[in-house]
Length: 214
Ligand SMILES: NC(=O)c1ccc[n+]([C@@H]2O[C@H](COP(=O)([O-])OP(=O)(O)OC[C@H]3O[C@@H](n4cnc5c(N)ncnc54)[C@H](OP(=O)(O)O)[C@@H]3O)[C@@H](O)[C@H]2O)c1
Image 1 (cartoon, rainbow, N blue to C red):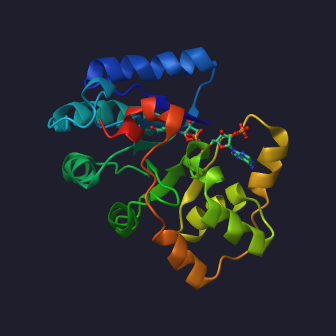
Image 2 (image 1 turned 180 degrees about the vertical axis):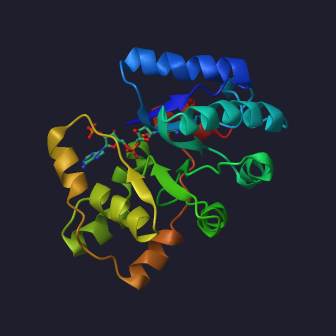
């Protein structure tokens, strides 16, 4: 199980309290993975302040809980390269994962390479582009060739990049379909998917700051 430290918590005392609060709410003596939801509070997402000090303080609370066995693993989400480098400069325990937006039409290759070179696991959230990829005619055509669904193709794409895929569905049939991805996308098709047209409009999902670019 993964839980997140609220993006707005940028000091040690509040982070410590929030970790204890999550354990209590979940009724557990440990959590598998806890991640800082965002380097910046949502209210200032995309602003100039990267909250380096605040993230270092929050990270300190996560490290302590990790060392106490309350958190089995600790990580971050939506962290860019400078945010990661700032944490690494002072933290005794490095982030084990960075959960980032990554899908066909929006794959941050530079960041992914950097994280992999630092041995930080990359989790791709919204691998189906919050459902936007479903409408894509090119994806449909390619999926038909492989005799798979568009979500299967989209999930397999991030897996072949070496990422963990975090799709979401409320439909058990879709869940089974999303887990059935034991096929291989050819190198040529991977190149096509890597250079797919960027998705600019996420429809209803654009209200999330991570999508709207705010
Ligand atoms: N760390 C962060 O800041 C952050 C931000 C956003 C999201 N996330 C996480 O990422 C995960 C996924 O995010 P997401 O919902 O944005 O996007 P997603 O998984 O890319 O897309 C979900 C959409 O795709 C549809 N879908 C999924 N599998 C399908 C299938 N096999 N066939 C047809 N439709 C399918 C779903 O509809 P149905 O329900 O009808 O299947 C839903 O509309 C969530 O766990 C979320 O918590 C993290």
